[in-house]
Amino acid sequence: MAIRHGARSAALVLLLATSTLLAGCATEAVSPTVQGTVIVVVEDEFSLDIAPARYRPGLYTFEVRNQGGSIHNLRITGPGIDDAVTANIAPDGTAWLTVTLQEGEYELFCETAGHREAGMYATITVY
Image 1: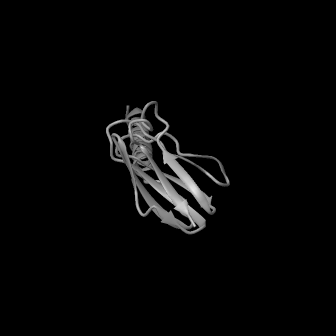
Image 2: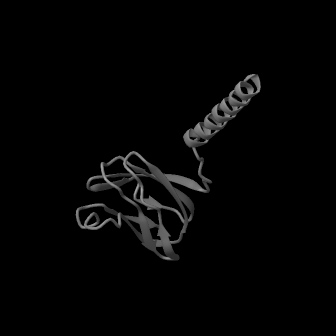
Image 3: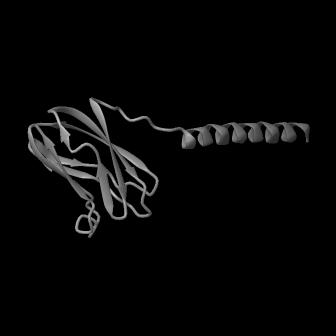
């Protein structure tokens, strides 16, 4: 019986160690690779706030914070950008999107059905 009890104890220790390790992984924050200048974009139902609206050409990381109660994302269209879009962002979540902006006008908007039409868009100028 002592051997069986020892094996059970070892299994329990292994289980606890594995659970602790996995719990640590689940709560560990993932830091994005931030490049260039950081621009904070705040999304809510149904607004998209970004300031200022004028920028110089260069490398930018958009930090997109979803402060709304539904899923949002951010797409950027404009000169030199073919496919710049975040993954869907859960409420209270954050996503990062790094792009190089050239001179011209850019549109930022949420692609979720009906959100752009409801006011989740902004225009910025790069000069």
